[in-house]
Length: 149
Image 1 (cartoon, one colour):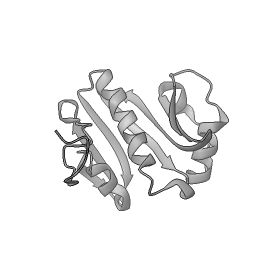
Image 2 (cartoon, helix red, strand yellow):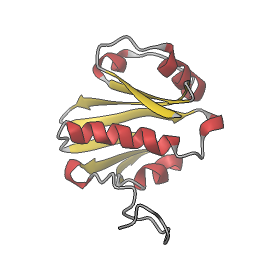
Image 3 (cartoon, one colour):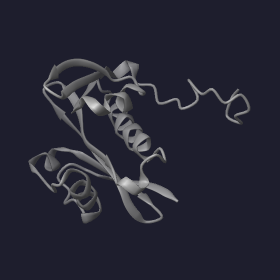
């Protein structure tokens, strides 16, 4: 069973989030955690993905979206990104931004984030809040999908 759990700004982060972040990025807690909504995704009670969202300089920012290697390719990263974008929508985001290595920008582009600037291998991406679309069926190509209306 796949489950997500939120941790509000200021809450002490459990090791479930920090262990995923350490395994993927090689670092744990930092000063942004106190300002961020943090999400962790569990697969059968095992923490397998995490990410966070915070408010800064007139925009919501996404960061540290990560999935443990054995869980990649199962759309768990997509779920984590959608949870974070849903939180932005729920807070009436005017825009959502992130910085990511150029090698992973395609992952974020699938949900509408577009490059706005580059700095070396890092790309800043943005989506206006009114363009966030979390409809998973919108671009589905499955002809016999039971969710298709």
